[in-house]
Image (cartoon, rainbow, N blue to C red; front, side, top):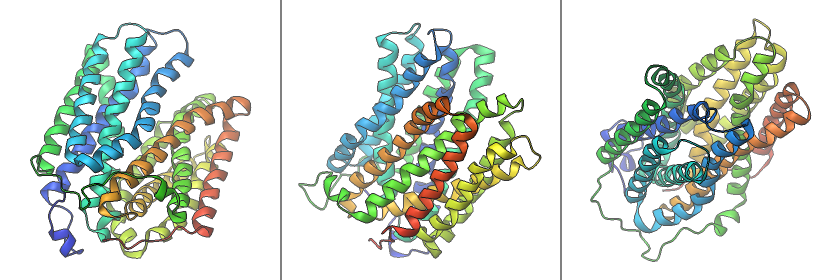
Length: 396
């Protein structure tokens, strides 16, 4: 399935046609659904005994999403993106409505979280495969930059809106908002993608194969860089508030500064990433990203604290589209579902380790040590992209 052939014939043609706009809107609304439910721990606190149980319930979503991702990559290869995107959104809607029925910890609660994670996984498999296949290779950095801005906008806007809904009408209003966002996502996807277009793979026996991808050294080292980036990107929001609270200050200004910096960088710099090279931007961005994390413990009580937030946000805004665009260049058109399913599964795994492993490490040492080690790990990512065989691939 393709969008306008204009992009393929003319790499200088703007991305901003109806299909591109509405596909990004579908991502924004799906991630708004997920972001509304970042507040689910508030509901869990009234239903379970202990933060460790809350962690398990919340973590089941990500575990289900990662484990099911390769399976959905195969389904995308066989059935096309639109069908799997629609399936994922239908499953997410069922799960979002299901939260209304959960009143206590038990199998029903765990099942809803698993179902939600599976639905999200299906959407991501189809959506990222479509992003990799539908746009001209010379525009992928710009495309993924806009996508990243939509994802961050959802994360920035949905939780505050959710807090307002909970305060005014309770948790059922939160679940209703999450459900409505999925319906809006489906309408956006329906507008972006011709739903009745037949899926015609070049190879009728096509299927998503992962082993050949793992034999590609460039792709494997890109995956290593990806999990490092995602792990660090997850560690900061998971533990910054705890560090700030311990110092008697608010973490809000850091998040405001970092995301305010990341969103325009994602919107503006994608074209430069396409023009001057994704690997070059990885090498330029990692030191900014890593230095921003390293400076957090030392500057947290200082008037210079926004400097670390700015470095972190700019680095994050550059690293996201560069990693995605490099991954999307691998494989033929029929292999894109496998490529992007494996890539996004590794990316999501970094968000799991950024919560679980970083939590264990901070318990064994300290929150300050956690951020220093995380910053050093970011520099390891820099040396990987500097010294490894990650390279630009000119696919068609």
